Image 1: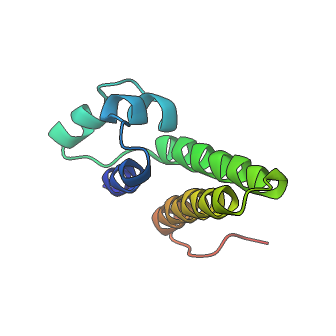
Image 2: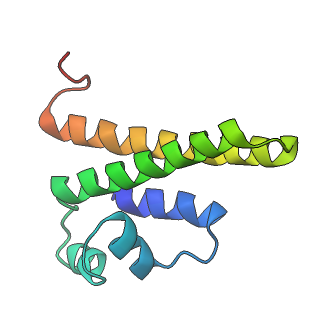
Length: 108
């Protein structure tokens, strides 16, 4: 599941992130949602993917704004990396939703 991949990527930078926190905060689902889906051998719903997209995109935006106001070069570089990570993960989720819809590019 893409959610497992995203969770593992986030754990690299948010080392204390638990699966329960990921499920409730990023997916906006109950703590048992991912476990139940795995047991049923079913992928997550599109609504859950859209919740994940919105959370990642929003966090990427916050990091981008923080970069703009930061004077310290080291912090700015680290925060830029965080912004890029969250934005890239959001794009991966969007691509998955589009694949499910049978299209790779959104309508203009």
